[in-house]
Image 1 (cartoon, helix red, strand yellow):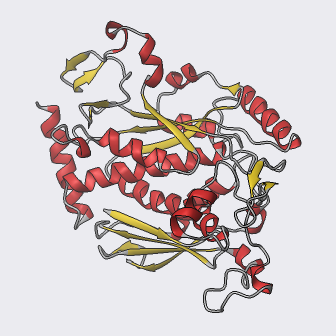
Image 2 (cartoon, rainbow, N blue to C red):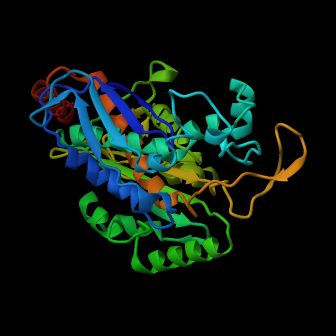
Image 3 (cartoon, rainbow, N blue to C red):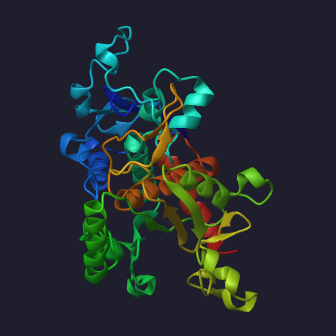
Length: 392
């Protein structure tokens, strides 16, 4: 399985093409739209979300709500393009009128300056920010929705939520009280911040509201949990086949993510091995299992069968409404940076995007290991493999 996305933030369309999804997967546009709505309607989002509807259209690879095994093309229309049609026009030359929104003062913390240098976009840094914008993640969530639908067929469930936004932090120990990921999802999705409880939700909303009044931005931490993951996805034989490494790359590849950890993560650095190593047990019903999950479901780059637990750190969005120091790339004079419409925080939406990226990497690993042509054959192989592992 592989995918690519295309589109600019204020261009006409956002597109993704997915190859390698088996034939026979039942999927509807609504399956994807539900996930797009989760990304869009998160607390702290900016005015752009009042313009967009973010609904997907299948352009290929699906017939009568069933995948064909051929490339799947997903399309989301950018409603805001109506206000940018002349500025983003692909088939007319640049003029003074249609270059009115030039960006000549790069925003610190964004790709503007380095991207301009790399691609020689010295005439207008908008050529950089239009593609480097987090708007592109709408298609990663769409691809993730397809991946989640595939994983559900073999009993894998994936969910992302928020641990903290700025100083407002939930109690992660609460997670253990839930008997299933579905129960945890019901709680976190009931809050506009995707927090773990009502008290934390209120604190996070207060932090976001105050940050907006201060014309500032704020970061935080998200967590993704996947359950039902088969044992042995990934491999120890080559560094680039380690599945936790692939997931780490996918998470840090999301806009604004600056850190990733598994299980106990960075907190493990202050502990002894006897405190954090996941001991091995066996019983007839479960086979081999671990007594804890401090390693986040991985050993040697392979899944252990325990829950996959991934945390990602999201930096504050660098687009501020009180612009920071910059330099005009034409005159080299000191100026305040350009200002683009932005969110107060990306954390509440980032939980959905991180969830999508974990689902994508897990789906890739499943399709690397099992038949990728037919869904029914893949499910038969997974069931036989699970039985083999249980009897090991």
